[in-house]
Image (tube, rainbow, N blue to C red; front, top):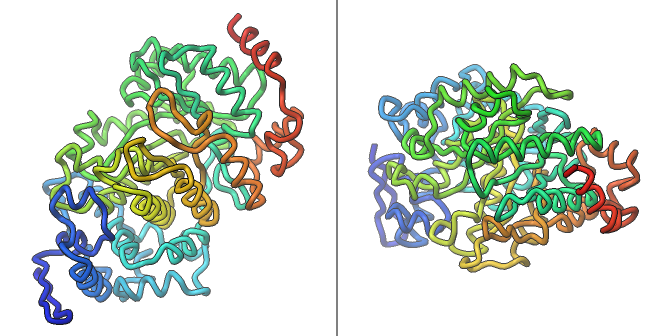
Length: 464
């Protein structure tokens, strides 16, 4: 359905809802690359004005990608809870924004609403919100999940400890892991991106992390970020698997480019749950996403990259994951050109995921050829901390020497916890205090840290 508006001396027309959504999106290089972005700031404003007056229910009547052509569209429509949607059914996108910002709308109200929201509705309202709007609403949302630690409780911020190594060297991985633990990192997950992605390596690293966990009675979960089928093979062979990882996207085609089918994710979820390795809960899936993945696979169907990102969250919530992580600046400047675009995208992703009821983490990151630096990441980290982000990354020195990108360090996690008075997940916080690493969140990594000889003594002990 075509929509038109006159703005100043110009008339603007948008042939369908997909085009309107794309033109209303704040500027980003990926949409320009795809040829779907507004041609001017004035056209963007025109699209945002029309979008603000669009009824939310229009997204039910006019799918951006027809469900008969895309199983993610089909899943989104199947999941939609019409009873939960009744609360906001009569609202336009602009009225929905005002409703969300109202002091009367609490986290409890938003939690009941989440199943009634389609990802496209959430993406639409984010396009007409300022950063401060999204932070304010995100802060209201509480999403709690659990495995061995309980993630997302009020007053906490968790950290994925990311001890990647360019040759998957066990001593190097253990050194980084023990260093991160001394800084209070790892309560979200100890997660390794393997340099060599085969079953032998995956199994060896899973066994290594499980030995570390058991040797020191650490309440953590581990994960090797390999393809879901490799994790399923490991489970079938009795390897100690805690979480199942998979990168996902917002269309059927992009998931096929990852070698992923919905049935595959369901089978993996069932296998991991049947192991019953969790002690605090049984959320077993860990998903990662990122704006631009669909375009890079030529699987975007002319939809803007931010809307496709939020559609990926629609897929994620089917499986009640422990963790969902948007790796916001990792794909590169072709999709998010500079710090301004990365910061906006990180806040959008977190807001949209939380509103859909997901335990959202953000990898506050950039590639070395992007127009960004660590000061920009400090800004995004501080904004996300105030927005109530569920977890962030802990990378030695903020420099991932295997994936070759810049993220957040163990020190950055200490900073944001100190600044906002946040603690680790309760089970992990208790372990930190009982082990003498920290007596409270304010001195994580600053007080009773182990010496280097003790580090490497522990590594040699584990290696034996």
